Length: 83
Image (cartoon, rainbow, N blue to C red):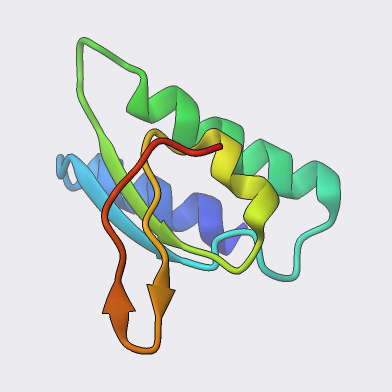
């Protein structure tokens, strides 16, 4: 519920950006997918563009992203399309 609340707060404040740190941590698979689908739906809304940047260790979440970058040894790789 905290993840959904964070997203809702960003929407209420009329910001078009939210930073999420491990938004699917401690969630069961069904809840993980719901959070990721909410983020994807919001970022695909052409009428009210919304941007989300999330940090994750779960590589399976990359399929929900438009672009990905890897942090390794304190350096960020170039942004690229997810595999």
